[in-house]
Image (cartoon, rainbow, N blue to C red; front, side, top):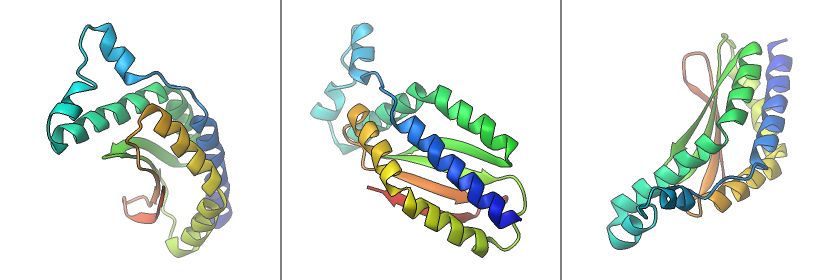
Length: 160
């Protein structure tokens, strides 16, 4: 029963990601231009790698903020199914972190189903990455992680 539930949740998550990946986002430089500054473009070009990474992380956070309504919808539907969702920036990557709220017991059974589902939905995640790169040109990947109730990684896959 748990395996069937996990597989169904995985499919719902993948479809939700597909819907999330097609959203158009605003350009972060136009936001900064409206306040009279051009901080979004100058620090990365004129200073070192650390500030370029910070600028990229800020752009990633702006992208996350632009899809926050979709994230909230996905989170609400997943909570009803016994999962939590966090979407976070990890350097130049966007990470979707799904965590089960219930004890899954032997996670090896769920792991296989999740891996198969992630493999079959690779085109969805590359589509999400394409949309992400339009908003954040420095974006490198989309990471999808599934955690058990205790926060241990069951499956993690990076799409580049």
